[in-house]
Image (cartoon, rainbow, N blue to C red; front, side):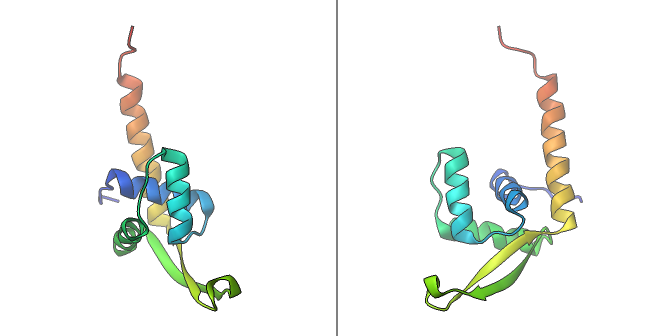
Length: 104
C-alpha cells in the first residue's frame, strides 16, 4: 500500500467505494454534486484508468442498455487494495487534522 493517491484520485476512489460500482458519467455528477466544482468526463476517465493501473479499481463491461442505444457501460469497482488505500489516506488526514490548533 505504498502507492500515493493524488487529491482527485482519492475523491474519485471514495465516490466509487460509496456507490460499490460506478461508471464515468455517474461519477461526474457525484463529484460535481459533492464538491460544487465542475469536472469533465475525460478527466474522470483518466483518473479511473490511473486507479485501475495502480490496482485500486477493476473494470468490467455492463449490460447493454436501450437508453444508450444498445451500448454497454464500463463499470468500475474498488479492489481490496483500493479500499485499504482510501482508508489509510482518510485516517492519515484525520490524524493530522486533529493536531491542527483551533482558530480563535
